[in-house]
Length: 160
Image (tube, rainbow, N blue to C red; front, side, top):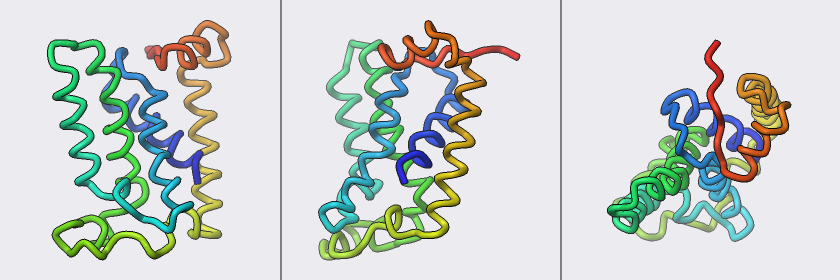
């Protein structure tokens, strides 16, 4: 389930923040990286709000007095938080409240993103529909806009 997280996180962040300086490639990276925990018997740290909050604090501390770099790097923790919302991680209190629920609540199980079939297939189809909407809304069929997204991570807003 990568398209669901990638497309929906870009959609939600772009339509909510409307920030021209945010790097949407990093939003996608943050949103899909927790899925990789499925390869190592997750969910692990990437599925916890604590990890997303520590990542946010790290970005804020490491980019002091570098406003443009900060705005770009904020995409990673924003993507991590978007993943938590889109995955309904808050419904698993053991993972959501880690480490307060005990250190043994992580790992050793399957992550919902991979084993949510056939519902996962439906979410992927919704993700594809939203990706096409983003393609049209931000005119990514135009080579310069597409280049701006892939090279700089920018989505240029089109006012209707």
